[in-house]
Image (cartoon, rainbow, N blue to C red; front, side, top):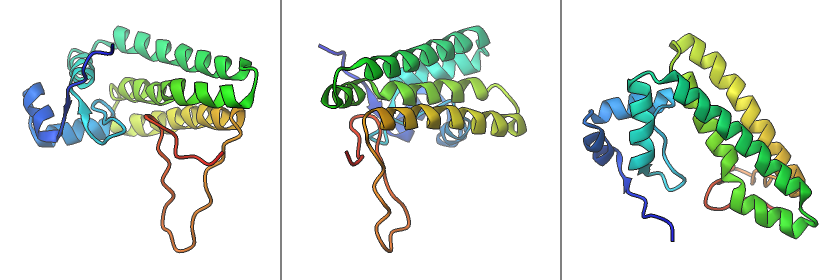
Amino acid sequence: MRPKVERANQSKLAEALAITDRRVRQLEDQGVIVRDSLGTYDVAVNRYRYRLFKTRDNDRVSADAEQAAWRAQDVLDQIHAAPNLKERRRLARKLGPAIGELGEAMALSNAFFEAHERDFLNKFAGLLVDRAFAELCNLCRWRLPDKPAGSATVKARVGSGFDIRG
């Protein structure tokens, strides 16, 4: 059985980290604090990320980012090796969030840099994560839905489930 995840809204997270709501927003903009797919904050995950950022533990952050990269590659390899489309899709739904975790790990690493450097690094990290996500979609023969007429955006959820057309 999985341990219970303590989820919080912005104010409760600020209280748990002993910082202000405004600082939570700033740290989220920097990539230090992350929301889950439900729009809430996992307190344990963000406490860990905040501690690494606050103590400037670059070695641990780098190791976590490298581990996330290997995990994402392993997921793509497992999906690629699956014997059929149905199994690839099952694995993608189960393991696909590792690609998002790679993006989060890279964002935390980038948060150690100044804003102008962070902008460049975040664009590069975004390209890498986009490429991994595109590969996952290709392996599963998924495509993003066409934007409905009159719609300003297309929403695709990654995490607890994929809102992608097969």
